[in-house]
View 1 (cartoon, one colour):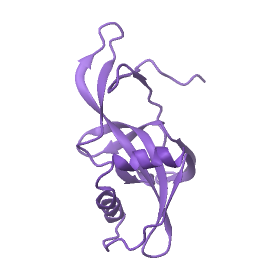
View 2 (cartoon, helix red, strand yellow):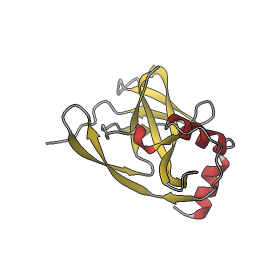
View 3 (cartoon, one colour):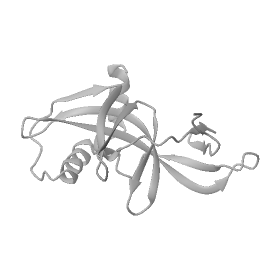
View 4 (cartoon, helix red, strand yellow):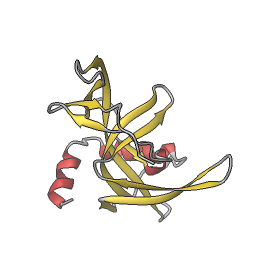
Length: 160
């Protein structure tokens, strides 16, 4: 992704510093942000540990991946990854974050496919989160229906 693409993404995030602060707060840090050092990436991979039985799983995350985020109020929420970056925290350590665009359920279905239709939501909801909100990569797939409408492909599956 070029600098022009990142500048365009940042232009859609008028409250970037506020959202970044809220992400740090989610992680247990409550001080004001003193560093502005940010580095953008097109992909990230990391290992997660399932707490109950110590199973390791590797997560691969790319720009434009469709993801599921477990959200307390709405259970499973869908989003598309628009940015991956690291930021130097006040303690001198680097922390990874993602920028997402959310899918909002329209409560309508496509007449032929009988799959739910979603709107792409970029204005109402928070968009920056610590990367660890994605603890595994459940497969979900969306098909562009129009400029801001997407169809959730309920027939997508992984062949074994």
